[in-house]
Every structure is written in C-alpha cells, then in structure tokens.
Image (cartoon, rainbow, N blue to C red; front, side, top):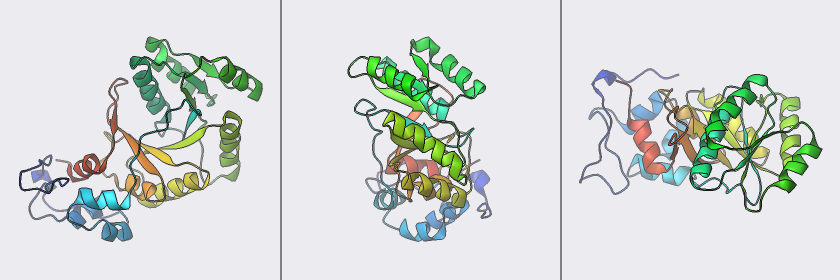
Length: 264
C-alpha cells in the first residue's frame, strides 16, 4: 500500500471554482498531483495511467461506467457480497427509498444467518415492508407469484467468499431460482487487488452493477475503482448509517470529489 502524501493534515474538502473545467474538481492541496492522490488511495498503476485526462472526473467518466440500478420490477434484484460487506444495510436503504416513493418492495431473505435476518427485519419494520424467508424454492416461487403487479423485489443473498467455488455455486443457484439480476455490494477500504478479484468474479457470474458500501468508514477507496473497472457499473455509494437518505447516486463528479477529499 502506498505511503500517505506529505502534509495531508493541511488538506480540506475540495471546492469547485469558476476556473475549473465543467466536470472537474480542484486539487485539495496545490503541491499534490492527481497521481499522488490516486497512489495514496492504492488505485492500481494501470488505472492511474488510464485516468489521466483534463480532469479526474473526466478520466473516471472515460474509464468507468455509471448507471442506475435495475428497477427490480421486471426481475428481482439480488445483492451479493461477503459477510459483513454491508449488503443487508444497502438493501434496507433501497427498500426504504422505494417505500417512501410509494412502492414498498417485497424482500426475500436468502441469508438465513440469524443475525442477518434479525437485522434486516428490524431495519425495514418501520416502513411496513414484507420480508419472506427463502427456505425452499417452492416458497420463493409462491411469494413471487402472490405479490401485487408492479411490486419490486429485493433479495438479500447469503454472504460468500469468491475464492470458494462451493460458496459461489450456492449463491448462483439462488440467483437462478429467483430469476434475479445480480448486483455486487463491495465495501470501500478493501485491498485493491482483492476488490478486483471480487469484481471480476461477480462480472463472470453475470453481475452488471455494484454498490459501494461503507464509503463513510474508509479513507482509501481505490478498491472501488479497481472492482468497477472489471466491468461493473457503479450505481450508489453508501455514505451514511442512516436508512433514509443513506445512499448517494454515484457519477464521475461525485466520485472525483470523494477521491479528492483527503483525511485531515
């Protein structure tokens, strides 16, 4: 991991100026370069070279994809990731957002860990959102068939290890039973190479999108870029523990601002 650039204690949140490019963000400290900052975030060197451009935001726009999540109506949306990745909290935030917009989703809990199920139920209880435990393929099918037309379906998958073929196989069996679109939830702060392994494996399993979790708890977020560069579109960043308003739509400018906001 790269050493922290000198004098970061003097840094502060970046501000846009009238002289900045339309989609650009100012450097937080004059003597630091974009390359310095990306190295501190542990962004892999090939990606640092690829991100070179008129501004960091424009480089991110050229290298990465940013799209909304699938609507979860035409097909269930299943969130996968390692245990402790924040996928249950991300799902609860998205469920609350749907409920407040007038379309409470059906949640299918595929993670039978007692702690995960209890946490999920507690998080969505204030929003009167139904949670169905996926104990058998038959009860999953019954829940899907009984839901009102147009109701979104969100699925909390069991925590997995991408280096375990058995773990990945079990996850994909559930995705296939649900007929779901797979989305990765990846926490910020992981090693960039580990993140790239996870992103690549999920992309090979058919995932097209990812949510960056725990962005408020990490300093270095280069792993998010490394994973997204494996073919996954960035959708949301989880930047707060709040259930309501805890998700931020990611785009090149938002991500550039996050990268350039260094610890003080």
